[in-house]
Structure formats: C-alpha cells, structure tokens
Length: 543
Image (tube, rainbow, N blue to C red; front, side, top):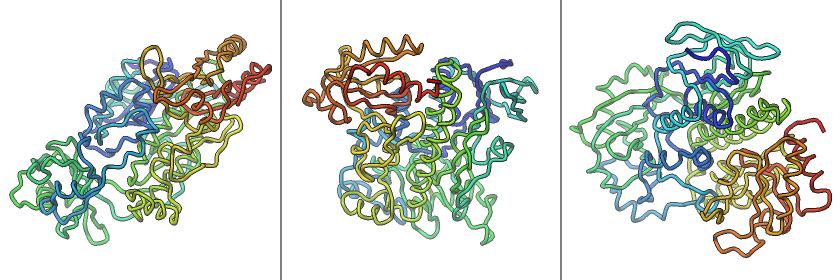
C-alpha cells in the first residue's frame, strides 16, 4: 500500500513528473508519484533531449545510460532534409554536400548525447534512478480529488488496491496539457491555443537500410502529395515515426488512420509499394501554444505541460519542463528541511514562467519559419535578428533568472546569438562550464555543484573556506567551496576569475540548480557578513 503521509505527491508520471520525483528523492524528500497509465508510453511524443536536460541527467548520474539508448548520429551530419520520398533522397550524397554538423554546445556544456532519444526510453531510465533514490512511483493510479488546508494537502487516489487518501505538504501537477489539477484550481491559460490541423503520429517498424544507406538524420520532410509528412528515426535501426496532418474541415478524422491506411501512407512516403511495414501504434495530437496564468496556488505547483504547452519546433517543450522540475525540487527540499523560508517557493513562478514564455514565443516563431532554427552562420544570425528570434543555444542555456533568490540579478542578455557570452558569471545566469582537475580527475564546474549550495572562488580565494565555515555554523547550512586555480584547458591562472567578473580573490555563490545567486568581486573584512546576508536573502530567511 502507498504511504498515507508523504512530503510531496506528484500527479503525472511522464518525463517532467519523473524528473521532479528523482530530484526530490535525491534531496531526501519523501515523494509519491502517481500515474494513471500502467507504464510509460512506448509511443514517443518527444525525441530531442536538450543540453540543459543532459546536464541534469549528468547530475543524477544517468547521462551515460541515456546516451547508450540514443540513436547514434555521431557519424553523420544530416539534420533536417527534404525530399519527395525517402527513396528519391541520395543520403550519402546529401551528407557529402552538407556542412559539418554545427556543435554550438561543445564549449558550453560538459556532455553531448550522440543523437535523439525516444521519450519512453528516457523515462524508463529516470524511473529506475528515482526508485533507487527512494521515490515511490505508483502506476495505474489516478487522482480523483484534492483539498488544500493551512498545513497541507489531502489527495484522493484510486489505484489497484482501491480508493485511498494521502496527506502531503505539497502537490506537484505534472499531468499534461489538459491538466485536471490546473482546471480544478481555476487557473486559466493564455496563448494561441490550437495551431493548424491536428496530426497523427504513427510508430512503425520497417527495414529502411536500403534507402538510408547508413546515413542518420534527425528528420526527413516528405513532400510527395500522396503522403506529405515527417519521417523520424526512433532507434536508428528498424523503428520509426511517421507524422501526417489531417483536416477535420475537409471531412477527415483520426479514425480514418487505420493500420492499413497508415501502411499505405508510409509506403508512399518511403517510395516502395511493397515495403513490409508493421504498425505498432498511432497517437493523435495537436500543436498548441499556451501558458498558465499562474504556476502556483498555495501548496500546489504546476510543472511541464500543465504550466506551459510549447510547439515542437526547437525541442523546447519537454526540456523546459525538465528545468521546471530541477528548479522546484531544490526549493521544496530546502523549505521542508527548514534551511529556507516558505517565501522561497514564490520564486519558482517568478523564475520559470518568464523562461516558459520565452520558449513558447521562440518555438512559435520557428513554427512559422523553421529556417530560423536551422540556419547557421552570419546569414542565419541576420534572419533571426530580423525576426526577433534567439539562437537555439541561447534558448536552451542562456536564459537568466530575476527573483528574490538572486542577489543583484543582471537579466539583460549580452547576446542573442552567442550563448558563451551569456554565461559570464552574472547573478541569475547558469554557472559557466569549465573543465578542471579535481581530486585527480577531470570534471566540469557543473559537476562540482552536485545539487548543493556551492562557492566558486578565484585562485587567491582560499580564505573563503574559513568564511564559509563561519557562515555555515551561523546559519546551519552546508556550503561547499572550490578555489579555481586553473582550468584543465591550459588557460592562464586567473583567467577563469576574470571571465566570470571577479578578481583573483572573488567568489560566485551558486545555487543547487547551477545558477549564480550572488557575486563578490573580491574578498574583504566584511565578507562573512556579506555572504550571510546574501544567503538569508536568497533563501528567504529573516535577517
């Protein structure tokens, strides 16, 4: 039987809910996740794992495991291709003509996956890790109601044992675009809503090696009028997605896509009439753009699609939701542990809603003009500048927070194109990644955060160890301290400090979610008091 009392209940067992459970459990928070489906859906709804999500997988210790499940695109340079049928595309020739695949994240993040990964495969890895950390995950279990009180939330559930109730301190709704929790709270949404005709996604198995000739690609745009749609690899071998639109105003319906109809369309898209095709499943979906008016109502929080529904172009939707989970989990954990005041939880909406709004706007721009996403070089930069679009790496990694959990934030982005310029150590920005030698190993600065409050000092900043010890005793906190003497890339001593806006004796205070919360350009006689005040402010504790 599920526990009758837990710290947090999460409704929704897809990617965002699972990440929330994993990071709460990693922080020692007792967590129950409930999902009405009996298991994660095999049919992929998202494929692109963004660089920030990879960083969070790395923090959780499972990035390598996920990488092994990705489509191996490490030997190819084709991303988006367009052709009447797959048979008419000479993929090896296209690969020879295509420029090398752009790697905008290579210098800004510690790990890059070798290709796309179906959401269901990702979810299974996160499930195992969340359970290993102590989270309780109950599938075939549905929320039937909830009631908030001054001291907690009573959640009514129905699962295999029958109906039961659980009390918790906080409820997290990760229950999708049609969130029942959001509707019960009366939280409205704004945005364009449904965009264009609905789509049918067909998961199928077929041997397409004779057409691909070993050349991987991210997506193939099929233009033949008989079967115009998109073809995407799922496992890089014999499992694929075919996505096609249909028009209800023209009398077309989702029910029209029988297995035989789907096989016929796939054969037309590939260009071989006798191709053996096994249809596994179909999924109907609608491109939407919507943003919840609020991400919180007292003790209930919205995350992922329950808070924001982002069009698929750019792969910003699921990845934005995963960052929601990471942001929210450390704040709940600190409040429950008594190391932060309850007002810290207000910064979740203050930080994540603007990020979600930007992701939604940027994806919608790309929906109207996909070249804004794929275009490279100076020509691509000009197109984006003219359209008011951000370069994809900036959307994924360059966003900044401005809330009471950041002291003296610097919200303006130095660049809309070069994400490295945005990762400059400014309060509110993600800590810059640098390779370092630490305890005999090469690690990233992000690895050293390890979901803790962390100080990164310059090469003459050894005195911050004593400062941190003193402040830790005063406040009952644990602070990790690292002095960055030199990066492993051969940079001159002190260059790291200069790159993040501090002197050799300065320091960055980094939150558990890798974002810079405070920057002291140099150490001084009042540094202990300054650090204490910064922590009290950031954690919403009384001065």
